[in-house]
Amino acid sequence: MNHATHPVQEADHQAPPPPAHDPGQQHPIGIYLKIWGLLFVLSTMSYLVDYFAIQGTMRWVLIILFMILKAGLIVAVFMHMMWERMALIYAILVPPLALGTLVWLMWIESDYTFWTRILFFDGGG
Image (cartoon, rainbow, N blue to C red):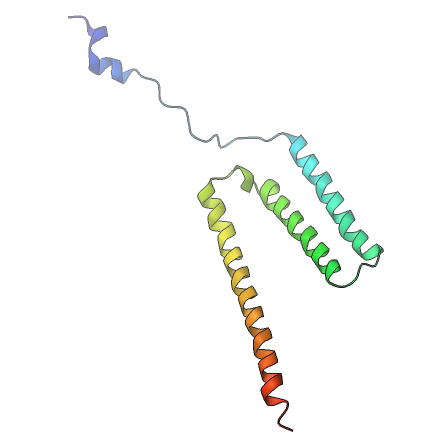
C-alpha cells in the first residue's frame, strides 16, 4: 500500500490558509500627503469666510461644512476608518448621527415651545 496516496496523509500536508488581515499593513505616504494638502485647502477656505466677512446664515453653513469635511477626512484617513470593517464604522458613526438627529428634533421642539409661551403667557399683561 502506497502511503503517499492515503487521503488522511494528504489532508495533513496542506498549507495553512493565508491570514485575512496583515497586521503590518502600510499605506503609501502619498495618500497622507494628499489628505494633508486637502485639509490645508479646506482650512484656507474656512479662513477666507472670515477674511471676506461673509455674514448671516451663509457664514455658518460654510464654516460647518468645512468643519465636517475636515473632521471626516481626519477620521477616514488618519484614524484609518477607511480601511476598517463596515461593522466598526457603523459602531463609531451611527451613535453621533443618532444623537445629532435627536438634538435637531429637540431644537425644533424648543422653537415651538418658545413661541407658544410668547403667544399665551406674554399677552396676559
